[in-house]
Length: 459
Image (cartoon, rainbow, N blue to C red; front, side, top):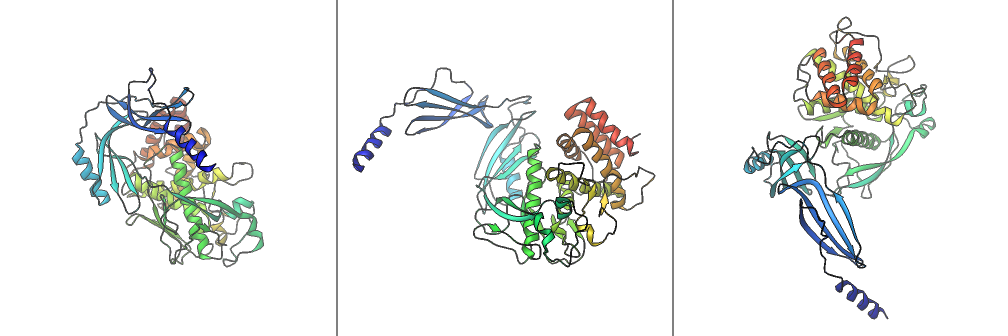
């Protein structure tokens, strides 16, 4: 009986009708694959534009054994393309990629990258220790439009605070208690998915975060469950927090804002402080008082520095630029907290790092700094970047309140590409207003300008 069934299945598979493309097949396609299944024939096409492949564009037809044909049309519009002649030669693009990645690309081809304005680019595939690095290099400017490892990634599970116990439980009486894990903190723990892990390793190393703490936690099953009194907890919390921030940036539409594995350390530094070091592109979290990597707002603040350093090399060369950096870090902490605490009536969003701050503040709410102070520019400048940063953080927090979280963060991140290492607050504000106009029109620009006027940054 089994032999008869197998013979029938094999006969059915072999007897599938030969595939014939529909008469109405679009002309901008290149056939790349035909596959036969038990129920039909599936033909895949690459979308092209004047003979050049369109990155991400596809078209598929599925002809069933009953003769019915269905279509999956994944073609994307090609808008505003300047031309199909590459100013940058293929060899120069390959050399550029090899210089950055340390390996010669194994393959390269000219493609069109769709978007608001489509761009011509060289797509290169470069072997890496794990998988293959796919790079899209602008064929006009040589800039890297996108770069990612094409290897499939793995997920794990972990236990974290999100964003921290004070915010999650709305309880200002919580304290560090010498790193103890006590019952009042139990409801603050959350089980989460740890995304983008390297499938070839059992450590917290992934596409967007790279744990360099020692000793680093490992798990063959990718299950990382620790309590706050164990060193592994901070390593997991930082991995999840950094990865969540970068995932959010991608959801906003940005493909090249710190799009890399961010190095971080949660052990070895015993001060009650944390810092981002641009010379090595790494974040170090202190373990004095509340361990800093227990408070996601500390993590997100430091990640804000990494974002700006990635967008503008050497950012923060002047006192005002440094103040903008600290202000943006504080803002990034509170806007990331918005996602986990949507109730504005009870959540002190403008209070920054309110779990970490329980170790060194007496007033409630416990805040390291705030994004809603009455400070104005230039009267309240003190010459200290953290204090002066409260002027900038309040301005962009008001942009958030006027435009909404998503629009505001697109504007704020996009504008930072136009900052300089020594940008002043008025210059940065004008760039942000111009970006709001470009992305969302005159009304958004006016709302953004008012936010900076209210803080005295713009006249």
